[in-house]
Image 1: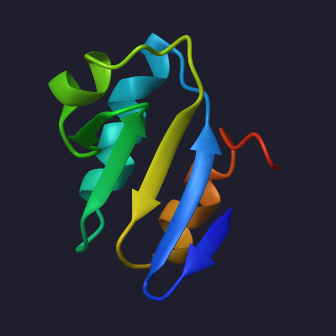
Image 2 (image 1 turned 60 degrees about the vertical axis):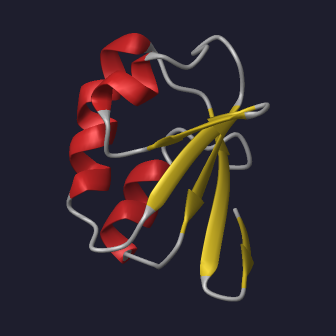
Length: 81
């Protein structure tokens, strides 16, 4: 995880069967969360958006706020541990 002024960033890998739970966890947050691969950026609270990404690649999650619960959840998928 890296952080900056008001945002937190994670590098993760997701399997297709994990997307539903990931989106559910992101949807509980009251701030914006983006997930991206290369130049494609989608709303992490959109199941269709997340499924539209290439899940075989490393994804970047950018949180525009902090939630201890979501941080603990997303760290399970984090490449940095």
